[in-house]
Image (cartoon, rainbow, N blue to C red; front, side, top):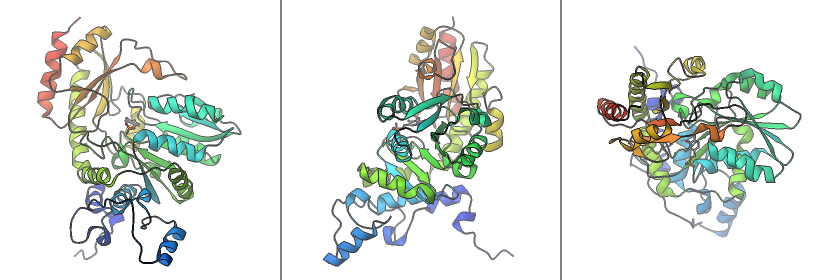
Length: 397
Ligand SMILES: *Cc1c(COP(=O)(O)O)cnc(C)c1O
């Protein structure tokens, strides 16, 4: 007879995600943490205000720029999804989260190693502001693994990874790279937007700083921009201080929507996963499709590592057609159920023509006719397949 209750840490992610971040003093008797809109927080006395100033702590009333229970509750819920995490900082976009985490770690003269498949604005930040601050970025092959040791120099301070890359989907051997980084006291940061901590608890695999564009799967409804940075105690104060000095804050209304999205992220991800896999396998069998880039398909670079380390796959992948970029564009234009637009992770399907060759320097990308990237939403999967089928059949070369 089992009489022992599972602690939150022992619960499966699907259970944790339901109540993580909920505290009676924030929610009262209700299920969701309400929207605490505030710039001014009021204190009982001058002494009381002074002790608030001095504590400087987390989850403490002070002033709106340090958030209110709505933001604290969301941050705590995201922290709960990463083993060993001390805390989470929220940012007004995924780009702000990545770039400010880098700023917190790097100083002039440092060298940053960046995976060649990283998100284009991360590359832009490296070649822009970081360069102006005399921080050098060297790009590397996402499949380098333990070979990264050969790229280190005395000034290498940090490694930024994105696995899988959000256009080309290579999976990096993160445990191998982190082992090298740890041996040389180098900080590792991962853009974990595709898998999220739900499918890839990054800190368990050795990552120091786990970053998510919450705009995508956490929010899940295409209506809020947000980013999160989760880390252990070692980096916490430094990251928090940098974020505070740069005045980073998200609104309680946005935090409320993101928290509401997070509660259903598990079920959404499982549906995204199932449909995306079915569609990827269907595309893979067509002779007008040259290649499908999906980490769960054996043909994807790094697939064996995905199989070893990831608990699942999400709804974003790419494919390459036989034929011209005009044909690729016509196929996308003629889709009925797929919107044409940036971003992903919402409930609706999207299609985008992307050109990875413009975002590479350490490796080359030889498919110059464009890559079709699909975000598979929550529509009926067979409807999505027949939509793709009609458009692929209409534009045969
Ligand atoms: C969208 C995205 C980001 C940036 O998030 P924003 O909220 O749009 O700033 C970062 N990384 C990846 C992989 C993304 O897809």
